[in-house]
Amino acid sequence: MKRIPVRIWPAVMLAAVLTFGCGSKNDVAPGDLTGEGDASRTGESTAAGDHTSGIPSDKGDGAAGANRLDDREYRFDNVHFEFDQYRLTPEARRILTAHAKVLLENGGWTVVIEGHCDERGTVEYNLALGEKRAAAARDFLVQYGVPASRLRIISYGKERPVATGSTEEAWAVNRRCEFKVTR
Amino acid sequence: MVGRDLSLTGLIEVIDSAAVGARQAQARVRAVVDLDAGTLTGAIDQPRTGKRIASYRYDMNVFGPRDSAHRFSDDILFNLTAVEGLSRTRLVFVRAAGSGVSDLYTVAWDGSEVKRIVSNGALNITPAWAPDGNKILFTSYVNANPDLHWVDANSGAGGVVSDYPGLNTAPSWSPDGKRIAFVLSKGKNADIYVMKRDGSRLRRLTHHAAIDTDPTWSPSGRRLAFTSDRSGSPQIYTMNDDGSQVTRMTFDHAYNASPAWSPDGGRIVYVTREEGGFQIRVLDLADQESYLLTIRSGNNEDPVWSPGGRYIAFTSTRTGRRKVYIMDADGGNVRLLVPGENEEYSPGWSPRPRR
Image (cartoon, rainbow over all chains, first blue to last red; front, side):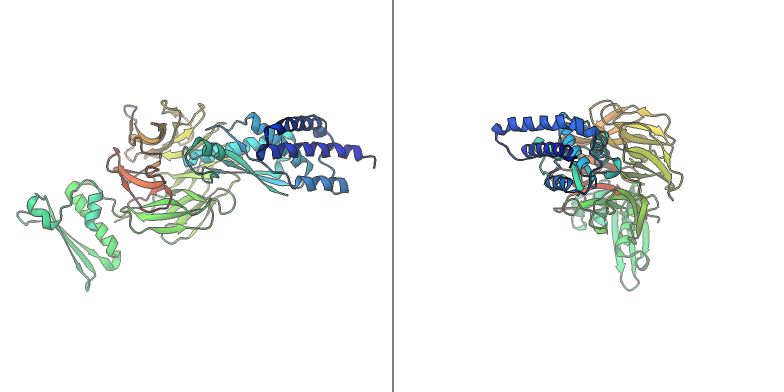
């Protein structure tokens, strides 16, 4: 019972992350942006303390179980890249930070990080570029504390676009990392 | 069929016998098929005097009817032009087969006899035809990782060559067929390696934190060209087969990749980003001048030389979908290899079969 306060903080943090995650995916009305900003700030402030202390251990009791139930709804949004780049953008870091927090809360989850490219450029070069993108996302998560043993990367180069067409919009959507999570 | 083989070379104009009166033909070709004997007998005559220039006989019981005709085509071509024909060569290519799935096919150089050789419900890409004419190396995702596989183009037998975690891709056979250059990332970064055909003596050639990929051998087997973004953008480099003496070859344009070294050793064909898309350029190594081979015709990629270097096969989106084309090495006489709706790309050319 003494440990309850420790559990409350991760719960708050996760709620914040979830709000943020949904906000960036669904077309949220402009009015919601303030809430989203607040939520992510809350998330960051709790993360600083959480990150270094109790996250990895607690498995299998009631409170942690409730957290994981929430996390099951968590969507691992794609992160996106500039043309011919594998550097993580500030937006990509923001999304990866959220992913990292959920992964740290759920020690049994494993992730395959897929690296993808847009249709421009050669097959072989894009395979290598997709590998770089997936490795950049993986390295970020590892730096955040997610054990490398839970992460695997695979590059599909430009072979698996999600958007068809030769437009800036389609290219931007296709330059991505996807996260296939086994929960 | 013989007429089509000869027309496709771009070296011989085929005139139908009915139209010969109006045109001055330089040779008259006749072929007789004897079904009882199972032979194709071919003859080349001088049209005016009727004098026999050469005659040939092919055992269709041994070669089959198609191969017999292709052999006759190559014999006519060699007799009249001293050029070694390609009628009996095939190309391998990738055909998209649904979302994230692709199969490997081979096809005769005239676009006939399309044959599926790899289909496993996964992505199969970057095929390279071995100098022995039988084996094809390619990357397959069938085991949930881009591993290097081989397949026998005739029997369909195959197996895994290299399955390190991460990329095992972009295979290129040394001209003598004894070594394979390819790319491993080992879960980090793409670098170029060389191993013996049996997988032994794996040696890493590039040690750069940047992307290194697309190895292609010089005909001597002593140097390789490859793509690297070590300068900040993809450019073409060459190096010795032990990784020493790295030399940058391209400086214009921000995207140069996919090099292929010509069989005569004097040129490297590659993909460049310019003219509002990806185009094919050829670099003359003697004078360091490069020439554009495709202009404003969609995106053009994956150039490979024919045996002998007279033609280049490549992928183009000029009709809105990816298809494989063959052009003369100077960019002329572009022809579609396999018509149809399928997305097709990454051609690899077989060597000439033994006679």
